[in-house]
Image (cartoon, helix red, strand yellow):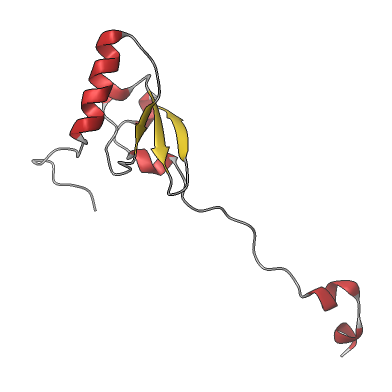
Length: 99
């Protein structure tokens, strides 16, 4: 369920300040942040963020399609290693597979 319209989107004030500073200065250094819950607003378009995923910071370049989403949506926290396979004895054709 989304946030109430009268409250507006949640934007971390520190992240917003850093983004404004970059826009006025013209620098395009990545903005390092741990605020995954920060909503992407139109002012962030064209900026690069380093979003923490619990282990490291991943680069996220903001485009128009991302507006309204959260920064954390683009920095996955889990890696999928595949579903469990068959036991080793079944694969090798050993005695366990003959039963």
